[in-house]
Each structure stands twice: as structure tokens, then as C-alpha cells.
Length: 237
Image 1 (tube, one colour):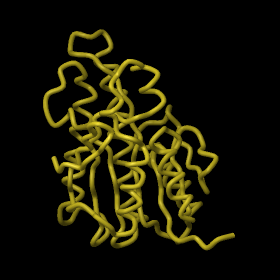
Image 2: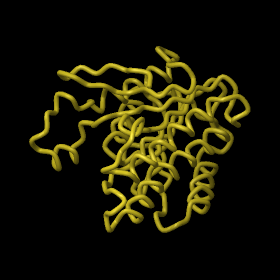
Image 3: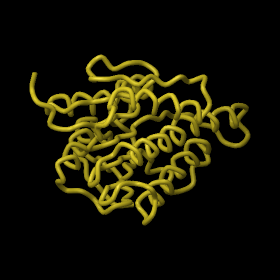
């Protein structure tokens, strides 16, 4: 067995982007832990989330599983790519239901990822969260989504500040995609212009670079992923 060259935890490791991240780091002989409701068979360890548990219970259960797995080891990176999408304005019959779902999928996961980083991230390691470019402005057609993603943006800024509880010299950054090129998005938007969709391997390679201390953004950066004509650039939001 090849020597482990580094360790990373992927929150949302069974989703489309999460699976791409697991594959990216596994291909580089890294140990990868996945956190999700279902196991990722490619990961070295799987921490399973119980969706029926409340926020505090989820955190306790996940941290217990991590402790049993890592024991005294620390990780080089924590990547949170958990999330989802639901629309609706204030008059929508599912307004509160969808807002609750968005909060759980984006904010609960991001806060738990931050608590994992506070305890298990090495000094100089990185934590990546996932926001959304539309949430930099008003989102009347998807209020719950915009609100939850805006909260993740704020969390990123707070975690990057002094005395946030994260290890010294660690990096916290937040990616702000518009649309990711996932199988589900292709299914639901079959006629869309996919030349403006961000490829998953662009994002997973970005995280790999950060793990190697290459092209790291400024701490606390909100990084818009802007894809045009199948070319993606990073714009600091």
C-alpha cells in the first residue's frame, strides 16, 4: 500500500462535486474521509449523517465517528460541498419548508465542517465552504436558498478573522458557483447552455492546489466561479 501523503475530509462526499473531490485526492494517494447520508465507496472512511437528527445531534455523531477514525491524527483539509437547491418566494406554499431545508443543507453542514476544522485541522491547513454567486444580491425567486448561502458567506468571513477558533495560519475560503456541471443539473435543465456551467474537475483541482499551498486565495475570500465558453475564471466577490 502506498504511503498516505495527506488527509482530507469531504463533507457531502457522495454528491456529484463531493465524489469528484474524493476521486481527485484518492488519485494523489491521500487518505479521504467522506461525510454524507450515504457512503462513498471510494473513500477510506465514511461518517454517516442521520438526517432525522437535530443540528447538535448531527455534530456530536459526526465528531464521534471522526474521533474513532482519526484517533490522534489531524487532517490537511476540510472541504464542505454539501448543499442543495429549492426555489420559492414568500408566497410559495413551501416557503418555510424549503427555507428550513436550505438552512439544514447549507448552514448546518458548513457550521459542523467549521467545528471539525477547529478540532482536527492541522496548522496551515484549509477549510473550504460552498456559497453561491446569486446570494451576493437579492434572490426573490429562491429566498430560502439565497438566505442560507448568504449565511455561509458571513460564516466564511467570521472564520477567517482573528480569534475565530481555527488553527493558526489556516485558510478559509468559500467558492461561489453559478451552475455546476452535474448529472442532476443536466437532467433538470436539458436545454440550458452548458458552456456557462463550471466543470466539477475544475473545482476539485482548485482544492488540490490549495492543499499543495499553490495559488491559495486571501483568507476569507468569496471566490466566484465564472464560466464562459467552457472556460472558468475565479473572481473575488
